[in-house]
Length: 174
Image 1 (cartoon, rainbow, N blue to C red):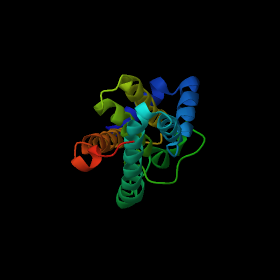
Image 2: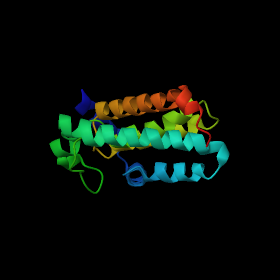
Image 3: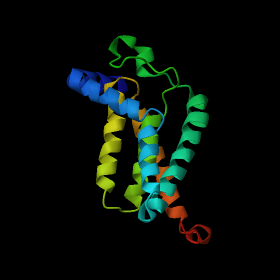
Image 4: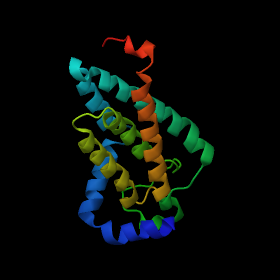
């Protein structure tokens, strides 16, 4: 089933301009750089400082959970390792596939904006979706890797946003 989904994406979405956009999105989100820079920018303003701190908290928890625990524990091979001839990017990452770190980190940060009901939440979620979908265009993640990365990111961001309801967090004045 997942192979069928990826083959359909390769057939209909694997055109050169989308591959280039996907490579760019993958590059700027490789280690969360785009999100880190964005959150650093938000730290500069008192009005958005709390949101930035929640985003950083979600990003750190996501990185530890996904990269240090889940990927090494489950050892799922990437599609580009299974069938290297369909690889669209310049290289096939050597780490494991499940869950998608790009998707999880993107939705960990974008989810903070979604759950906080900010004005730009739909822009953030759309950008996160573009990053997540680009991983399938490049043939480096299975569909279930993307879905679970989205779920993990949204779950972590939900916990980050709603953790501020505890009295300890509400006393913090940033």
